Image (cartoon, rainbow over all chains, first blue to last red; front, side, top):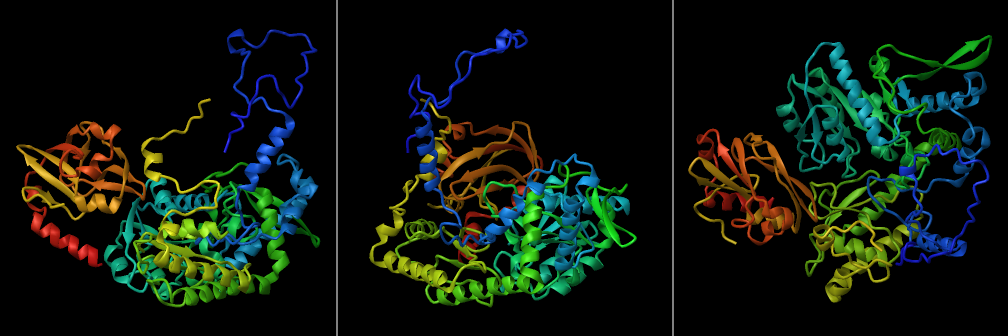
Length: 477
Length: 130
């Protein structure tokens, strides 16, 4: 593809820059003045064509099936975008006096209440801007919790199936990670947990269901072991789409959870932001939440909303109130679905995943063969002619599907992690499974077709070794 | 590729060669196969103190970014500068020109804890069957 810089032709411009018609005060230092900028010189229609062509090479859930495991690439209803664009929301300045922004404060208070109801937590901060940011906020709270108790602890336990953000968060907070093994059934190895937990353990970070799509059947025992040790349990809420409205992590005993509003609650995931990762905590941790939180007051039957500041707060983690329009979409989505609808969404996400898993396991190896939640993991060990997961992923693109998450979780060699979500029809799931089965056939009869895929994409098979060893990221005309 | 008999090995797939009070450390052929094409080696600073069993440098391949664990405790006395321009040496010649660092060892007894070539081969077989 030709870049916009290569299309540049001297003397052509899409805009007319007006002559300076006010006195030049000479306040810009001479040494900072430039008479030439390396900007493309193209006509308006060239600019339009260039970017429309680029956008047509993009792929998103609005174009096709996107079964990227652990990412919940579900369809986000457009009506929620429309609501977030209401002028009263999108045009609201964060410095507007509270008396003029009561409606928006009410929305945020209401969303916090919904999230508490869904998770079984007692208090919520809407500030964190993404899942990993919610994790960071949570682990910082663990830190001050133990500081206040004057206990010095340094280690956080993380399963070997965890999302990579978990150990990153732990390291950012100055703790060290201790890896806990998975059992042969794909859940946490309780013996390993018991062997490794000690008085130095701050807590455990756990995703449930985990990245294999397995709900840990020993969750109550696990949480008890951790609590008996005086440690805390963090729930990575990335996989909440599997059990919202069905299981409340707070009831299971978790001390805190973050919510990925930008995947579970109607903001497209992976669009480059903004995201939103609110954190919910139990009562005994509420005083540490970022400032401010929103409270409701009732005066003679009339509610009003105020900001509340806690003196033990870890401080602000994001300017103002977090990514507000994402909060609006989440609120609209939850209101639209209602309690039953939320539960139905989770049930259908799980049903869809199990349907695909049972179809694909006849053809692909399923290392943990048991009923899954919202996602499942297959691998390439039954492929012939050394066809790998990478080859399958590339070939899927030729058939108009986005590839699943590949080579993750790390505990499965050649993993393909598939998450269909609740918003796909049976026909789409069938088409995807048929293509997967066809690719397996192709790899027996016509292996080069798979090994050199993709054929139909604007970018063909990339030489990853050459690209990394001869790194060239600067455009030179 | 055979694992040279005169070297010692670790469970993290590093080899150690003793040269008086210095040791040379590299990764094994088994490791470079698992890593696939190596594209970047982040060498430690000269003089850095390292501790047996703790990560001290990073190897990046097309597939993954992996820690390299210290086979012995001590101080980095030399690093293989050639890897900066040609990290593929680790793939092409893991026991030779693809060596990583030299370490001035603190406690020679640590070397006794490492595996022989024979023990290491057995260990790799078990890993493969896992």
